[in-house]
Length: 370
Image (cartoon, rainbow, N blue to C red; front, top):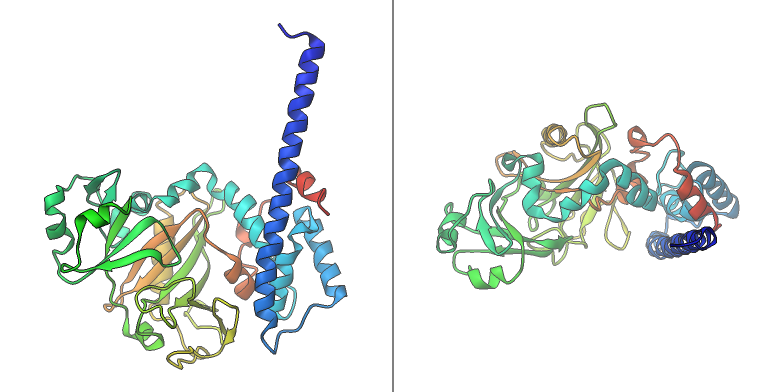
């Protein structure tokens, strides 16, 4: 049995260990913020019309961030937002605050199921995605979870002919995504990839093909569900392939903000290096004055699908519009939906999801780094 003194010392040791872990995590987070924002700032400042922030503006942003989010550690995100827009907008949410604090509150422990693509249809409905088959746990299954005999897989996934799209659970920004035809299908090679989904390949609407005819354009649509309320649309932007992105939209995609309910595009897009573009560099398509086809239909579809999954306070949808004008949800993003471009280009977008207070423990951990 431990004496009272031993118990007290043991408890003090745990407190010191927990405090050291909190401080280490806070320092790691600060360093990550500085690395990520420095890269964005370098890209933005390479544009001739983007000027560095003066000292007074940076002090104002630091003061605002400390008052609003408990620490000026998060200020670099609001600084790069200001560089992008040319002016500060009260109400902006730093990307790291949303990712590590708000999203944890909004989606909680449920968010990690988003890594498993085969579960996306279980979350918003199997009819919501163009899935044909899943390979999970070493077995083939249909979108409803029924077993498919391995020898029957090829006939099942190529029933409509043409090619299909294979997406592994680890795929991100186009990496890990491949197209397979009946002639290139190799079941053993695919099964070696681990868990993945097989989807129908989308032929995109001609309006999007005019912007870039290679990779299928996708709409990133963010929806939010305040507690006790129905889901609502928050923001959207368009992602277009460019350069070598002949098959899928990748990390090198061009992002163009969508500025109104009619799907009108903003006049300026950004590439992966934050170069400001008024036209697509490959096709010459001019963004200003153009609109995303079937945008309202895509938004309505996403809001309705979010309503099927009230466990999640925030969902990022990737949507393509097919040649028949139908919005096709390609995947849902629960773990890392990446709000920074939407927030800097269109925000503040997230007021409906704002917590009333910053959790005290986060204030303490962050404030010590100021």
